[in-house]
Structure formats: structure tokens, C-alpha cells
Length: 253
Image (cartoon, rainbow, N blue to C red; front, side):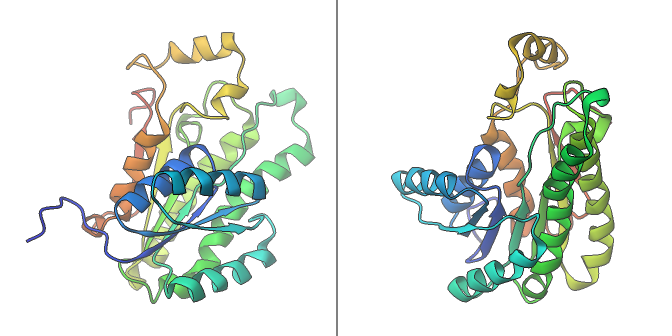
């Protein structure tokens, strides 16, 4: 019997938005447990920095430039990743952008940009991964939503709220649709996490937001990554359509 509580095997994980913040923390912890990791990002500079960081920790990943809002660009990248590793078993949909626009100032362009990356990108990345996940080992889809998708949020724009609420909804729907193939679909919903996104807020907004957390602090990317790690494990196989809240108690439901 393995002494490890969770086991992972020689499986391959594709992580969108894996070059910074929560995505990078997921890439690191997945690498630590022996998963093969492919990081997808639209920013080559961020990919290079992530690669340098992970190598310094002794982890070797692959990096792929792809704008997931451009649906036609997804499959060629996935084909290359599959060719390199021989499988795609885990997909983590982490890529996303933040919107802080007041309701009155939200433009159609802003709305479309946020929804294209956060929601459309999540769905079509999953869709294009299906041929590989269907033949994968203990296949998993792990979506990264937000506390804003749970209860509207406090300091974010409505396009972000809509996109993250939509991610939770398609988690439920995909979990039902993909269960017959043995693919689980789960979601992690972080509260405010120390990241580039959280640093976009001014000091006063940050202070007011902090007061709403029963635990009295914001979270870390590593805490979110640990939640994603459970869903990636073989032992999570009976969990599907679940939303795991990592939010310091801001939302309890």
C-alpha cells in the first residue's frame, strides 16, 4: 500500500494561465508530485519567467503560447502537447483577466474581452481537450472560478462576475455530460488571493475588502493550488460537479 495519501501517476496536466500567480502555483505543486506539466499562456515573456522560476526549483515543464479566446488556435497546441507527452489527462482552466469597471462604465468591448477569455476560453479549451481526456488516465477537468461567481463579489466589475458565475454553471453541466466517459469536472472558487489581480485594487478598497473575511486575511496562491491538487488526484475520482471554496469564510453556502 502506498504511504501517500494522494497518488497521481505519470499523467500529463495542461494548465492555462499557468505562467503567473495561481496558475504558476498549480504548475509548481503538480510538478512536485510528479505530474508532467504543460503551461499555456498568451504571454511569451511570462512563460519564460515561469520556466526560469520552475527550473530554479528543480522542475521541468513545457511552455506553449496560445490565446485561448482564439478557438482555432487551441487544437494545434493540444496536438503538440499530446505528441510530446503521449497523453493529456488533466486540464486546469485557470486563465483569466480581472475587470474592475463600475456598472455605469462597462463597455461592450470590455465585456466581450473578459467573457472571451474567462468563460469562452474555459469552455472551448475543455471541448478541444475531450479527444485526449476520453482516452486519458483518471481524466480530470479543474476550473478556477472565484468568490465573485458565488455571490457577486464586492470590488469587481460585472463582466468578471458573469464570467466566473458562468464557469461554475458549466462545471455543473460538463460534470453531468462527461461523467459517462469517466471524466470528472470540478471547480475551485478562491476569494481574494495575493496576486497581480489583487494588487490592482487601491489601498482603501483592499482594506474594506479585508474586513469582510472572517479569517482576517487574504489567501495565498499555494492554498488554491492545494485545492486543485486534490481534484487532480486519483483519490478524487468520486467527486464531480463540486465547487471547493477557498475564501477565508467570506462565502459560506
